Image (cartoon, rainbow, N blue to C red; front, side):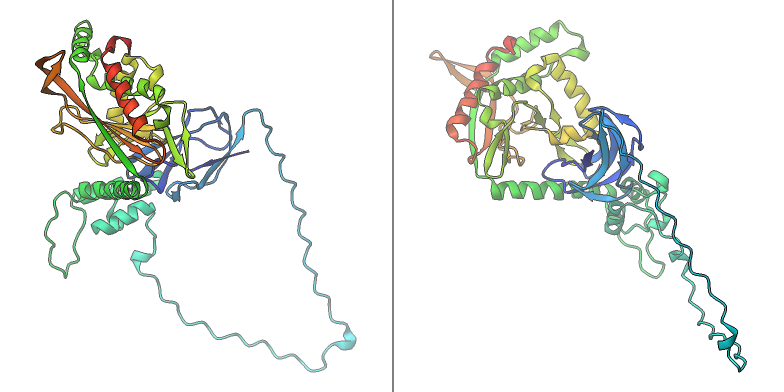
Length: 417
């Protein structure tokens, strides 16, 4: 039997609410199947199973808030026989029958009739508001308390009519919160539902980043990369493509980062138990701004083995799902390094904070025209500033410098990526 437990969805998540099961006992599942859905600050997360088998038992109930590592289900491995049914319990022995009193010991005097006990005092009837307990998830109750929402007037859309966080936020956005009649009407707060959703994610991110700054000894390196060759090649490649299939500069950057990591594998992995755990697979967490949950870094899996077109397709799939809050658990837990690309935003350089337990983060600023000296000649070229934040416990500046050097070299030959 295999125990299926609540997955860790990053250093900024300690618990989540089980929204629903997608399977039932007896269902056959295979690796990669979606078997449950969680609700967390990052949105609705689809949970995958990582082995073939048969669902033996569902342990957790929908609507319950569970910490990371909590037992969710029991899955019987493929080919493993089902456990024998438990032997039926022996029926309980009948209670002893009362024996009639022998005549010789019967009482000579008549027995007085039993006195009825005094009637208990009438119990107070519960108030109508307490007669029915509102069925709501713990997260929905917490959000309702923060927003001042009366759960009794919120319509639930979860399993069995349970009230979920989205129901509370919808009620808040529609002005469902009513002040008590005797109290003066409070001043309207701007966009309460959106503020609550963002604050939860911001608190989680703040906790993870504070721990990162507190526990990880960062070192930072920076280099400037001439993007003239890469952009010229990209323009020519896109000219022969339909608009829907054109490549973005981020695709070249992601592929170059993956190839450079193959030359400097110490930057691809985790720091656990005071030692570096390298990872052979390179899953790049790409930072995406979610409208409701702040910054999220879902992973693009096996980037070195993907073509540029496959990386572009992965971005087209991942970005809208992230912003809609529809991610898979593996996309939130498998990242071995993080890449932040500011694109055409206002920052020329980005110095990031490592996302634990990873040991490195790569930042790209916007591409700007800058003076560039080459072969004794001065010209204006498109220049990209690349930065590396790395964990000094795992590597040092020499490894970081090798990585940035490889990154620069690879981007000068985009046709080989």
